[in-house]
Amino acid sequence: MSDQQLIPEEVPSFHADNYEKKWIAFSMVLLVAFAATVAIAGFALGFQIPGDESRVDPRTVAETLPWSEPGVRDLGGGEYDVYIISQQYLFTPREIRVPAGSTVNFYVTSIDVQHGFKLQDTNINMQIVPGQVSKLTAEFDDPGEYPYICHEYCGIAHAAMFGSLIVEAGGGS
Ligand SMILES: [Cu+2]
Image 1 (cartoon, rainbow, N blue to C red):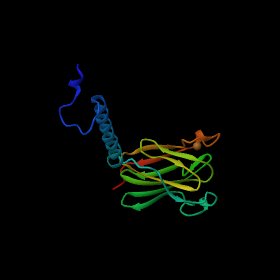
Image 2 (cartoon, protein in one colour):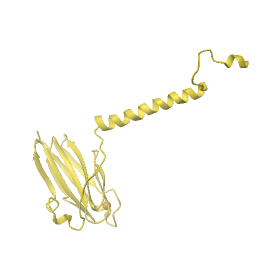
Image 3 (cartoon, rainbow, N blue to C red):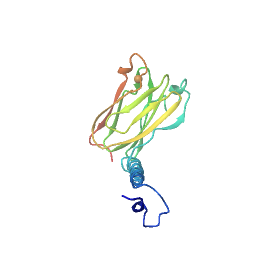
Image 4 (cartoon, rainbow, N blue to C red):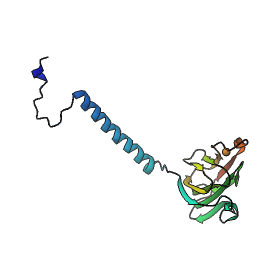
């Protein structure tokens, strides 16, 4: 090849090697793919980021409503709020029951150290920090037992820290 053959015929305002152009194109495809992934996860699959729902005082939260009566609240229309207190080494309540077809908002806080709250077979997976309320929402169409566990090591009996959400058939809206 002579040098003259390398001079492009079209009017180039952008001088890039062919190899470089391919990498630029590939990078753009990646950006579109990443944006699509985030959009699908957020809008189609219902992925949520557990937010800092509100602040509480971990020393008094267990004596303050609604946390002084942890458990399920029926909001009507198949929607439920669930308040759960985490502490070394248990969740209160340890068992939750809702009918199939429910939409459940989980509010979880800790009165001592950092814990985790992971609900099997759902997108619920939260870090539970003392003084902070973590909230996520899930829908339960299929009856069955959904165990929840603490997945942040919180001390010697961490492995004993679990509970169960039971979705009962024949209910819901
Ligand atoms: Cu734990």
